[in-house]
Image (cartoon, rainbow, N blue to C red; front, side):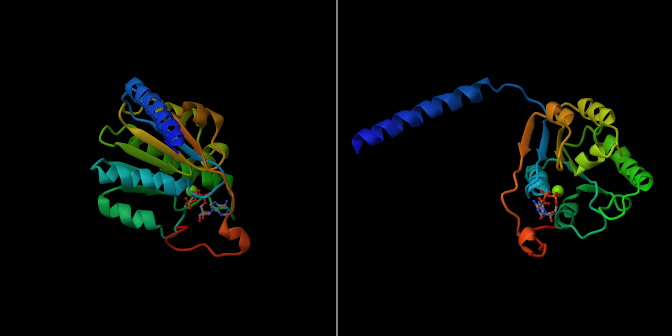
Length: 198
Ligand code: ATP
Ligand code: MG
């Protein structure tokens, strides 16, 4: 037993040394680009989690929601009470009526607002929820997104969510998480639930 404990302490000590070294080496201070992609549930939830975390520290945050349409949105209801500006794509893109012309126009309206957010020195975090689809469908030009993100204020962080993030966005990002679908209640016929799914 003592042997086992010794080995455990030794391993923990080594781990601590490795982590301490990494912490000491991490010297760069800058805003981050985060991509949260994949087919599993939790991408937007994670994006809004970052927004909530930032606001909890008194930082300033803005949100652009592509796709979401006119549904009620729990996060929006809460965050708007904390002076978070929301730009929501109300018309255009839906899964049912895909009309390239109106969808592109709707995407462009909100994208212009995003460009202002990405130039706003007072914003600490910008959440671009579901923007990956706009890029995949060519409703917004990839090069424009890259340019706006690269030229943003140095300390501003950007969170991008949505499935199938373009590889250029993945290359551009500092942190990329891919959420894997293991199972989802919807597949066994369970209805989406207020407070959990929206
Ligand atoms: P959430 O908003 O819950 O974090 P998400 O952003 O990862 O989910 P989206 O692709 O944006 O996922 O889809 C949003 C809606 O679709 C939510 O209601 C969510 O529960 C549901 N959903 C997410 N992943 C799956 C899945 N793998 N199968 C079925 N429904 C899903
Ligand atoms: Mg989402």
